[in-house]
Length: 340
Ligand code: NDP
Image (cartoon, rainbow, N blue to C red):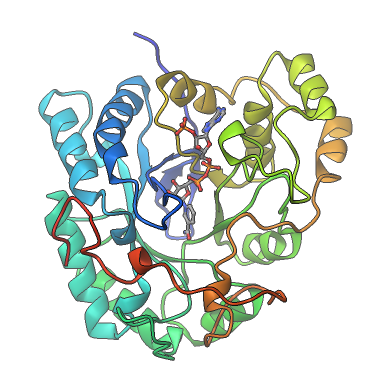
């Protein structure tokens, strides 16, 4: 059948990670609740992704789909499509589990929910610590990191990394850690180039993983009230046409050419193939320069409800601070599983 071929990047611990992974965050609805009704579609689309050649899966405790991810992995191993060692599976420790001993509990619970005996990579989801009630716990991420070093030493995970860390936080972590993180997973897309952060990571041999790699450049994320590039931008359509690709493929290819791993999410099978079919063309220097011009420091993911918390990683904006959505605080909020 149809197959995609995805090359690997090398991590600073010698292990390899596929340059493109499958993102599993199903998002929140207008009421701020998890879109749990999409979980069966995730099972179908992820199964298909593994069938066609995806080997890297990005999930998190927060996403509440670890059981689904685990069941698909088990099924694909049983069918003989893959072996466990062919897959690269990442999960994340949520903000409410930042005490060093809670990191171990969280990782063990993720393993149990997924039915796995090791993870390839586990990330600190954010540098901030927030209790289940939504209170700033002010736990130092250096202390949390010692919990990560411990699960690595125990062999529960093959690699440890961070997410949503800024340059200042990474600098402090590198100066005080035993084990250097293998990745920093952050938002990067055409509007948010993150040049300084990417340069810092690459200089220090930390692989950058781009989340929300399309920003708002997909019809489902279109917002005409913000300074973000549209999916029907004429310059993008011209570049895409020149290479016989879609604007989304150009966006992902541009990240790859910058040495950045990306983890687009789609529940649509045609897009599963589309998003991975980016390793057979090269964007030329002139077009790279044009694409770079779209960088205007616009963030799609900006959790302003945390902006006055200790270690909030982004610049603050002048808005009324909204409530933390209940679904980011309480696990049993209409979710389809009793998650701990
Ligand atoms: P993406 O940039 O991956 O965009 C997803 C949206 O784009 C979906 O609506 C999807 O629709 C649509 N889409 C996907 N491919 C195409 C295409 N080829 N053409 C048109 N539309 C397309 O956003 P995410 O925010 O989901 O980020 C990706 C992943 O990154 C997450 O799933 C998660 O794993 C991770 N992440 C991590 C964060 C962190 O804090 N560490 C924060 C946010 C995300 P459809 O599904 O209907 O096809």
